[in-house]
Length: 392
Image (tube, rainbow, N blue to C red):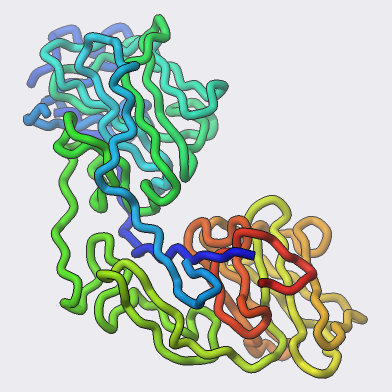
């Protein structure tokens, strides 16, 4: 089994704003039209499809015990300009594929004329996923339009944006106007995928999302100043709250290497064999594996397995785990709770004492979050699932 660990900075969540900012025409808003202008304020109390604001500028670890960090390519522009044939200067400007509280896409009108978006379409890389802009949606010059995900489809697109995905914008005749695609890790939680310079530049990962406003560049960083910032995952003795023990090892020390872009676990030491949470998945069947690494069987009756969302499962009486054996618990067969994209699992004995625990970053338990070496090593994202068998 090949393994990796993507350790990304925990970036602050953002709140979407709906502010329209040059006066809309006198009949703006009549007949149910949505006029998105660069100066007029709009009511933000409702969950409107069009979220706008003003801008006056046109604008992991491998088995060698080294934890590799996924670092986004901040210069790659995946837009295929050869396919952009529409004459209007309307662009996809920014998006969040792991947005909080929801995924969102921002359009910007960099032209000199208003654009009526009635009947325009927005899709992701699945052509069956389509959002049709409602009648009367008009985007004024210099204005932004932010559309958020709404699973009901009542006030936004009903499909989610994936870790590796695309957004395509079509006019009512289904002529492709603009598009962008991104790879896994290029639009992580707390960050966005946007153009810089604003409206005209190439797409890259932006650490400070600005839905409804001009995009801002990422700050310059200095590796060696002891402060984890920008795309750094570590700096000096700062590891963003991580440690060997937090990653499931018995002890030792992490090391910051490769220009602050990689955390090495080579200095971590194995934990003593024992009863441990050994492997977890947060997709498909939400399985949790417990390994008895001791030399004797363990009566698990009354032990409790829980996730950070409050779900719990009490192991039934008569459940005994032999030495060296694995117990795999599966959603809807054993426990009833789902494991989140960013979650954790704890194991407590019948007296409530904590036996073991682990937490994984967003996407860390896909395909699986597992200990390597099996039972005694630290956790990392594994490329293959081995439930009921040794991790390798």
